[in-house]
Image (tube, rainbow, N blue to C red; front, side, top):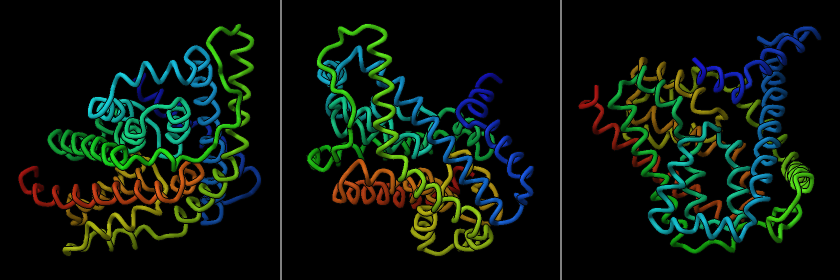
Length: 329
């Protein structure tokens, strides 16, 4: 009960969704129309992502005032190699954020100097897995499939982080921090609050225009691509169904909770289990709006590597589930 409230009203901001809809209806805008739905989606998501970004950056910056980059690096650098990737993936799995909301945390980890493998294992697992999604998956697909999904999702995140770290691509991180540099942790409370606010302002100034672009694209796709069209593609049981599912899922903008009901409907209409799960993973990990935002944090070569690693992992996962689906069901 408390988790549902926290997930829906605090993190999901359903109250904001309702408030935005009521405000638009008061202006005479029909939310059932494509244009009205797109406008509702755009305003709600821009505000939600911006609020989440500002709150996350503020608290991370406040905590970082006690742990300057070098000190943070010393503490978390103890988790090196495989251990670091596992911790990063597990930490991502415990944070109920979508891909866009995970990027500010990724930025904080990166600016603190954490290993690249750690940060990417977090970035891959965070939007794909969380405790709430596990419960929903269990209610729809059963415990075996739900736990298999989580375990394989963690494996994709861990292996993906290892590959990116082994390629030594630290030089492909963009210079994005415009805030105050911390020399030590001996600050007054007032100085810590000031530092945190300056970090929020610097980050907001840097990424806000890309939030507008990314959510704008997501709003157009969300309300103008017919659901039946997507269902037809994903429901086609052909050898390339998994690949098509991943390709269709990438431009769709939604979190794991938004994709689970679609997955249930697709499965009921005859789509193969692995094909549906590949679609879910592609939507949550590689949505076009999040990739646009991520591009401003990492350079094209690293972004391409990230996309390639995730895509291969998602496709292999889809085919594996298709092979095992008859055992699970």
